[in-house]
Image (cartoon, rainbow, N blue to C red; front, side, top):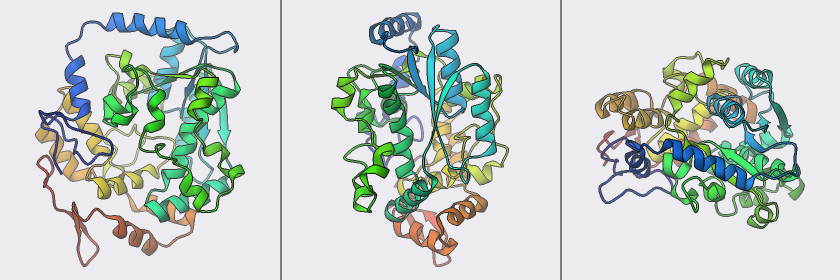
Length: 376
């Protein structure tokens, strides 16, 4: 395990590769754009791209996947009010046992801001079965639900005959999942290669006995379907100089976003603005930490370090304190929903802890072998 020499990104992130200078892909990208003065040209390029991919087969100019959170709220308003487009928003909602009241309020706020929204709600029975299967097989309850979240937007784009899908950040340039990098830095059609979707991602569900009929909402459209419908995904983050977790949060709060109120010790959410429509992502971030050695706080501080708003040493202190944070109440809610005990939950966690990075003490405590910022 090695760390980026600039931020606190470890090389254990899936599909990442450091430069010869030991910089992570995200830091390489920010180094490239930090002193750029061509943002007006980028904006004009976006206008040209939009003109190229828009069509007259629909009443809508583009489609945007939304949750009502910080990123999707800012995107929707910017696309409508800055670009002058008429977007169709698409939201895949969590079942009642999982969605937060805060999430419902935020989606309602987005609707009240004047948008047309298609809301997709899948069978909570199938959803629950997939959560349990994902946790049992991969210690990742979201493995199935992420398929649905990512697939619903292009599926609905095809049905509504909308060619242009506007996405937020580029996972390759802004996070480091290099498989998603397309023909240009704003081309999102390689999103299908991201860690969640790559390699026949629904095969494990077929092997677990889920029927083809149940799997339909969880299937990402094929390359052939993309080409037949002339679908194009564009990453908006490439065109925005001030795209960031904090900036998107501040902008959206001013337009009615309701943020998380729980303590950072329970959530690892330093500013209360991450994944607001549900809370179980908190335990998945903890699990990610035990698998790869980084969690939600790392993603926060890495961006702040790149922007020069936080020193690396300050980031190390926050990562050491909160990167594995997860309140017991979220674990209890999750285990009650999928029908397992707290003991079963931790047995599965222990079985999948990365033994190269952590040791499990006799009392069940998980301790890291690596030193944050240095590695092994």
